[in-house]
Length: 320
Ligand code: C5P
Image (cartoon, rainbow, N blue to C red; front, side, top):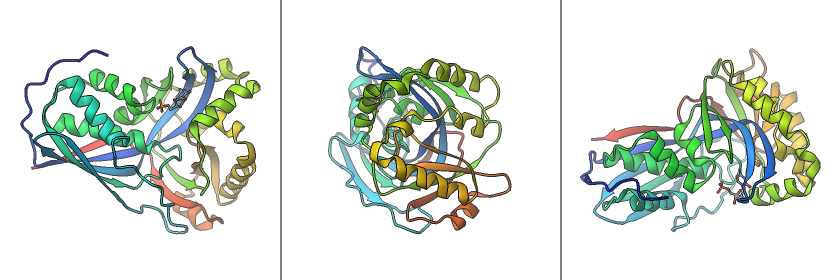
């Protein structure tokens, strides 16, 4: 990609910007065949939820620095697994900041403080949310005045889920997940997210889909169904009927997933799905049964989070 334009204004517009970087659920996710570029075509209904990391962005003359802290937003029960979170150049916050600075000619830098609440490598899009927060935060702090289209193009270079993390709300994702159509949610909903202690490697899960060719036999039908979801306001429960191809390639973990789904159903869920390539699973409660009630009846050692559907992916607060 070529440079969009050189930025002239680098004076900060605030003492700091605090960005709420929200997790996502894939209400449904159908994976298609591998393309010539190595990615897979997919069709998904993305939904932002209230579980969020916080990214504080403070102006700095030049260069980018990152400090990471953890915060536990779970409902109790088993505390979140203490995953190593890289604070070095591989962290998506720093990768996003460096890419933005290079593309937009931003000479100033920033000190980032990332407060991590979204469990890593669980299909909840935490890393993508952090990258989107860095883009939105720098754009606001330095008044870069880029259009949404320009920022979304930048986001797509960082990962397939980063454009949605920036756009937020409810959206149909096609292509490798970066071709987005904003949708309207018929009714806000709450959900209970359960995160097992085991994890799934996204790359291996995609490889497994290539090997188990039978899982792709329904791709065309699923694509058609996904496109039909957005014709009217989105019904969350109906979107779950799209399924999630990753649930079919869990191998040895398939039983663990099925048992978790059954326990959530017994606790009062109306529908249960895996999000992304897992291993997090979410449950939408039956009518008149709030997520907290499902949590109180749930028998298991998974880490639980109560979330609500959200209308945006990032939320900015300027600290004057
Ligand atoms: O785009 P992102 O960095 O999230 O992708 C991580 C990996 O997941 C890719 O390198 C690719 O192997 C796989 N992937 C894929 N098809 C997609 C999205 C991701 O094969 N639509």
